[in-house]
Length: 339
Image (cartoon, rainbow, N blue to C red; front, top):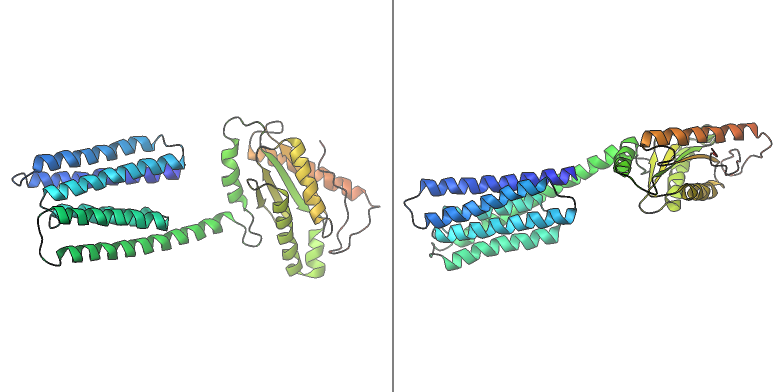
């Protein structure tokens, strides 16, 4: 949300600045015709950008941000068209407003279809001014449109390369490369907003720890251990809902974040994960639920980890339990950290 507001504020500020430059141009050429009309038009454009700056601080949804940004863009495009028309048509220096608008849209519009539609609108507006305004030298409009299209292509391509690199960096920063689960930073980013405000039911947390994971690496090799970690994440994802998250916070330690989940839901999901992994390895699971066990991610992790530790202690004392097949780990009943 903060990033969206920042981007919208920057966009509005650029609109204010571009219209400010146009106003300075009008003031420097006051002896030319239609300057009062142009000043009024560019003043409206600057006012629209200023309104966008104020609204950016109050934006709460993605849809509203798109609506405000699109409205400011339409106002800017209309003012650019009117200013260029009043200044003589396609040969006017004011037509640079179409170029700056086209470059801005190409650099900041992520969706290809929307980009094509907006750029077609901008180029069409310039062609309309060229048709309605004073005639220009042969080839002028062609070269102008061709130059705009080249700039649009270059800026759009570069913007997509940067966006792809940013997405890759974000994935490296928040995802575990082996399993594809969230890492500690990704867990904090995902869970942070869930604890803001009062939520009922609250967030539930499962802490998972594989039993005797070291034996897998020692006896079967690290490749087998890596495969087991990947299987654990896959089983956990199958057990949780689409809006929940799985994170790997240590070698064989995992956390499942269950959004809007009661204690009974947490225990049910824990049973599913245990059942899915039973043929391959034992897993100790501790749970915690907000707000009963805490109202922060750290508190819930501490409570869930304490219950997980008690599960492991109980299993260590149960020496009569037979060993498993598959990876050869110790068996254990699905006792999910009773309080």
